[in-house]
Length: 210
Image (spheres, rainbow, N blue to C red):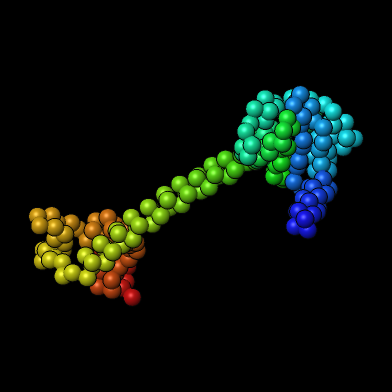
């Protein structure tokens, strides 16, 4: 008998907690589909004045028929409406005789699951664009690295040079001028004169050598 009393007291304490909860939403709907009880969280969300009690569930939820037909323990995503605002609860249905109790998790922060989904999709789109941009930058950087490594390997080799014109043998049957080879491999060039050529240029221009 004592154990039975403890169970009743525990159930009563849970019921009091649920009734006063400001986060978990709870409704009790009778066999006619009327809301006969709603806890503090549900009343605050739907009707602060408490007028939701006694109204048909279908007036505040488009999913009323699913709730009324749900078996005991069923899990449903139930959408509620309050004026123009809509929000959804991940809910569980408990059947007690002709009545059904609906207990749901808190709504999303802004009370609108669709808005949350759109925001998540927008964030994913931004991340996808950023990923694509970074992928392009990484590809370009890898290509530049490969070109640089190839150039360094070629410079590190002993390149045959023509004794007459100074062209470089860059492949089995390919010859290039030194300027063309350096330009093609993105090695910056700066033009000027070596001392002997500088003196020759001054003489050709009729100027005294330095």
